[in-house]
Image (cartoon, rainbow, N blue to C red):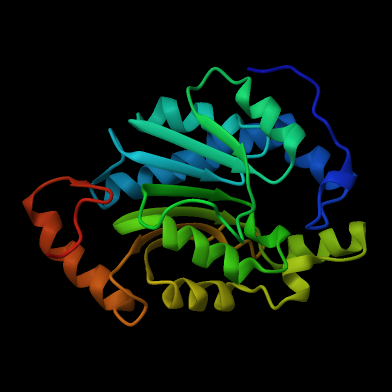
Length: 243
């Protein structure tokens, strides 16, 4: 595991992440949560729905210092792994990880990436940092192929209120971020929820979503199409959109 010190200069964060929160995001506790909670839940959901990420193109959106890159590489064996973060110092740390990945500075609300260029995207605890979180979700959906999957984890309102108490503000909470709003925006972005596993104390939890053809197709496309295709064997993310 990388033992390099984490840069906690809060002035790098235009989305308003403060010094204390940036330190927590890069803590050993956060790494343990990713390794022993978030990623096992993601892997379990994928197995349940017989979806494979092996040999696919994966994006880690808001990768921070890149600890999740190692987990993605070890667990899911992508053919290509890309990642970005808004903070340049975090990107430098992520680039130093052993996992082979293309890592760059980027803003989840305005991605400089082609449409439908990834089979899967991981978004772990990122959207609640963004006032324009709806744009962030829509951008991730845009770069997913039809039939691609989104694996997303977010805290709940109690966490955001605690964040507001510490930092004096909470960008997403101030902009109407809630569980209901998040699921609504998923549908508007053409993402159907296959799996939602709530966490403790009102946490939003983890989501497995699949991108349909357009927002109007919604959950109907996802449920009906995957029910039909999954009977024929294991699915590969990004390769099971309807003809």
